[in-house]
Image (tube, rainbow, N blue to C red):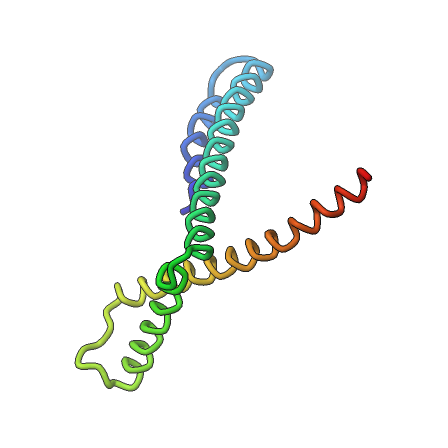
Amino acid sequence: MNVFSFISSIFEPATKLIDEIHTSDEEKLQLQAQIKSVENELLAKVMDYESQLLKSKTAIITAEATGQSWLQRNWRPITMITFLVLVVLDSFGLLAFRLSEDAWTLLKIGLGGYVAGRSAEKITQQYLQARPAESKNSGIAKG
């Protein structure tokens, strides 16, 4: 269940209760509109939170990708290569133990982070390369 469905499910009983109240249709509609307004405000705050969280993650990955240290820039690929080796060895039964479900979950999370990190790194590089061109173009336009 995602956050948006959860929030909607919180307000659904109140909306149904309003339908059962013995008041005019206009009053029912006003109450339902007020509840929907509160629900929409809450959803907007959740979306804002998710947006800020994504920006924070992107900033961290960008800092890692543009870092001065070799290890800082390459720890994700090293980790994923290590996981790849473990998966291949596990698939052929060459490990002394089988990978647990937690290891597979960690692999999924790591792969998702690696893909997001590489995407952020490429986008950052393209942005930084395009930025000097923008400032040159703006200088030409002014002159």
